[in-house]
Image (cartoon, rainbow, N blue to C red):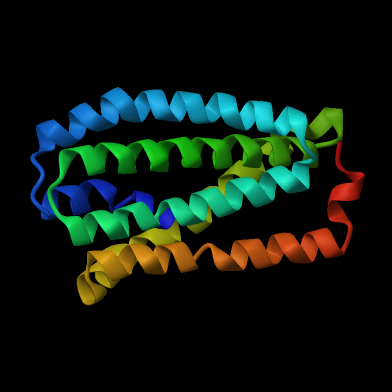
Length: 175
């Protein structure tokens, strides 16, 4: 999701939307969708086991990139862009809240919780930063529709890791 996220604004401008229209959508319904997704993620985290939350959040974040593939094929269409931003922000917020819950569960020792959480959060930023740096080259080489499809596929290794951790009963020890 982060791989696609850094190029969302350049993509929208490149296909013909003006900055003001994009900003209005992102700051209006996009913010509302992110807040709603955050609340939904919190409710999800309280209602179902953590591993289930991670599966739901991971799949939603991964698949939500496909709305931008569709946008690339449709072109300039304000209602569709609005829906795409809503889907992306809502799903992204759910995934983020669930992942924060997971990181928090990993930080068990009270004496070191803040340090552990800071290090784990920084570690997640490293992958996002390095992966995103090549995104522009990939988008230019493949075109926008295929680029966003590739970003969807880029989520598969994370889901494989999640399945591996689940098979090893990693989540059984987390509260």
